[in-house]
Length: 419
Image 1 (cartoon, one colour):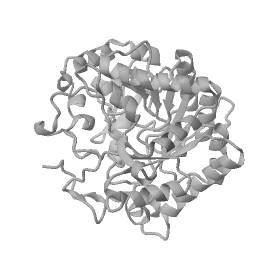
Image 2: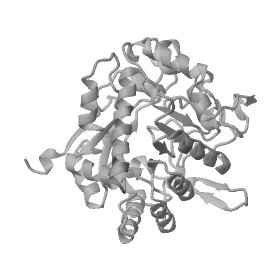
Image 3: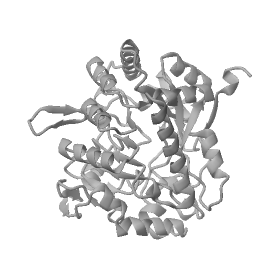
Image 4: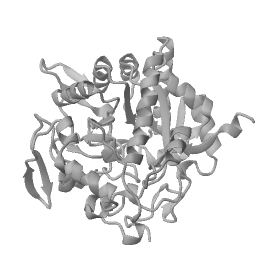
């Protein structure tokens, strides 16, 4: 079998995912992310994340536990992963994204769109004490734009967050980025911080990428966003290799439509520039608030409340990354020390005083227990936010291209949920 024959699109964790899918349990383990790589390269990528055999064994145990909890509806004593959103706003204006409007930021996120360093630090400290294996420092916004101050008024940036998590012994430290803000100075700081991996969103090669991911303030100008993100990867890989380090590993991620004409050309290009793992996300339709009844999966439950928690940039604690609209029924509390949430809806200011809760408090809260119970009993539609979650809609496979996705302009035809 040639090397190219081994390259195929398949669910992340491959054999491990398949093994758990075959076990008893009503809920299929959900996948929106797919690997587009060979087994050998995936194994090399994973091994490079850890310095010792013991660390690799802990990682494999963590991934197995991830699937066990999903199949058995068992939350364990603490989350396996915590998503700590550093920034909620973004420097891009991607057509498939739901966070790009000021209306969303002001009415959903509120006035605080960057999580203060003292809160980030406390979240990391608590995760270290609880033994949380994995931390993701991104969600809706662009984490490389993070700027804060410590108690001595020293600047704290994105690489400093990664370095602190490494210092505290978090096993897997990751972040997603569009790569547009990574210059040589930041790249060196990221490498020296030694996160496990950095995932860079690169939707297609140059022609399609520039349609989707040109920064807001660069549109219509003589600016090549594709060459900029390639330079970001180049400096990360070259400085890492210069220091003789194996991490951070670099992963790229794309939705399928921009690479549909020649997926292998995309794969080979990314491999040639030093990307260790190529992944593809199934495209999700975030248009509109409510889903039509026929789009809602009837026999489906969400695994996330049993595996992970999310701390938003405004300090709110949520059960999953699908709760991007921060509906009241999904907010478990606000992390201790966070400001009250102040939003503006229809030009009216409103202050929301959610109770202070730690990660541990939120994980064992009555509110989250109820969410888990409704998932387990196949009654998630009793929770409006869960009913309308895009993760629980009918799936057509990672290579699906919606009829109302414009392949010329690489955007939705309109703002209405597909018929």
